[in-house]
Length: 367
Image (cartoon, rainbow, N blue to C red):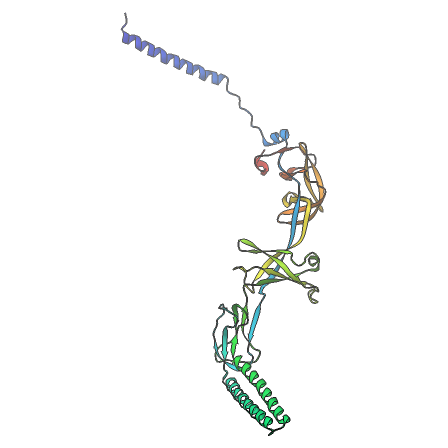
């Protein structure tokens, strides 16, 4: 009788023999009957079965703002050209370009010695004339002088008073002052120079009250009225203004109409800068509006593909104005109709389609 150890070894050997036999049998089977390859399904066959892949959108009726862009010059509503009233030497200029000033502030000082002396002499002459009039009145009451002599003294006093006011004004104008609140934008005077009468010494602009001047063609002028909305793109935002006034007549040389746009204060709006002004010239209400990229063009015709069941129909449409990648459809399409949004490049009238719902169509990569 075999020992227990011998029996265990015989069973282990038998197990390996069985495993080897199964593996050999499977190998022989695979060699005799190889697995069949599943043929690859082509994109063309999928499209032939399901149709051309497209995405769709529904034509909607909505308003569309039609704007025209014009470039205009920013300017202040209030501007003061500070001029010299007298021909005098400039003693000092107290402001620089960029300095804020207040109305009444002294901006420059002109030499005023002669004016001051003349004003002082006129004041003394008026004081003496007043004393003469008082003496003449006493004498008139006592019968020492006639009424005409008293009247002559009064007339002389009035003339001297007028001359005193004039000389005082001339003396005061040697102190050149601001008439408005604003910022100094130009400086044309230095100490030691001669300021001729009427010469511009400084320019002050009120930066808190701004406007834009633009020129409009007649075709757009007909649609624009006072209060019309205006968009001005500045850096990363849109600032809104409105048309303040319009010239009733065109410039005879250019044929253009001037429009003044009122703007709120903004740090990016600077006097003298050129900015874009998008003026609302028309508002389309209740018509069909489509993204302009949907519309196909062939020659002089514009068309879209309208979905009808699982096929599309080529539909010629008439377009109106466009703005911000949107275009109005004047005729050829009704609200609620479904049109092809993407994938129309391979379409034709009557083509069968496969509407995609998850992601947009991207050429041949999507079946």
